[in-house]
Length: 157
Image 1 (tube, one colour):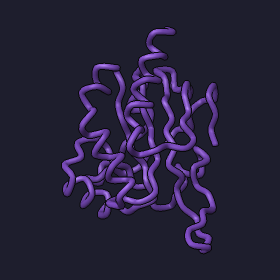
Image 2: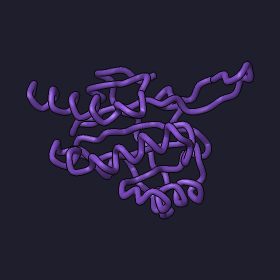
Image 3: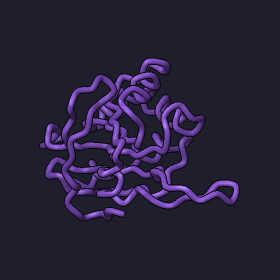
């Protein structure tokens, strides 16, 4: 998994509307990049709706939020529409970005092993450096944890 102090891997992925979004589009801005396993599942819905509800707080902190899952554009579009998610949901169907950030891993549920995206969040500064990593995210407390980190980073600057 990418660690604090490392340069954030560049990427371009389609968003829920099929438009290409690149990390480089946000050069000079703080980016909250979060990875989630699967659109429209309970934990992912809790996390995404929390981000939606806290978007003014992210904007106040000067941060842009990008969410990445190994879902198709069609699936993230349905997810975005169903829950009125008005931030970029990026479709990483080939899981190349998940792999680049170290969030593609073998998982286990009910004794069955499979590969999927880990729930992790990276805060990337204006220079493209990862300045904070949350390797294991809890959907209910995600926003509190990220917004606190953004506040601490701002105070330290």
